[in-house]
Length: 277
Image 1 (cartoon, rainbow, N blue to C red):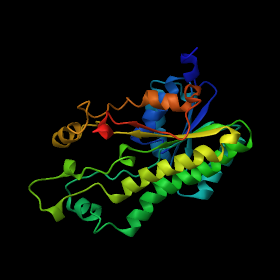
Image 2 (cartoon, helix red, strand yellow; image 1 turned 135 degrees about the vertical axis):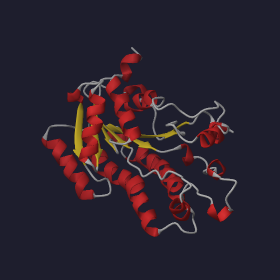
Image 3 (cartoon, one colour; image 1 turned 45 degrees about the horizontal axis):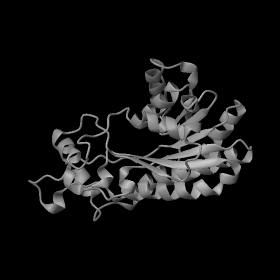
């Protein structure tokens, strides 16, 4: 009986940033337990590539593509109307879209990442995608979940950096001066922390209409990064390693399903124990 609660048959799950690395992994997790995924992204070409990749293992008809810019209210409303015209109800919204600035030693990254030089344009862009986008999508799809009386689930993909500050030492190059060191930009922490506030707000706002909201905060995922970086980061994690690419599948399945029916307003931190040290 318990395992059947994870089954997502007849459930439609919309994933923003669906053509990205984690978006595809979230989709895999849902398809594993019979859910239908609606992949939303700004690039239809990338969405098609994602569908081809997923279709090698899962049923093609369980994958719906929709071109959508999460920073645009009209685009989101258009996507909602398009799905509605096809009699497709969004049962679960996963706010996954984000710009994740990778830290590198390039002169451009050093100059643009440090707080002293971080541009207003970059601040506006990254917050628009990662935080404003989650708000706008929740506004449209969350409202629909509440209005038709069937309820639903909103999941915000945050980060372990929602509970602690970036440890800039893992990016450090001992051969460079302090002002030459690249860093994790301020926007990432602000966005991921903001998503936790949004999660808590949403968790009470439509609860009488059956809409729950939770957040998942993953730690670093190993994708063949520089050996030195991996060693430094792994030393900060009690389990002594970064996450494997598919280790968040079960958490997504739990959060999207009836298995988490009494979980609301929480931030699930899956970081190998890093936040404990």
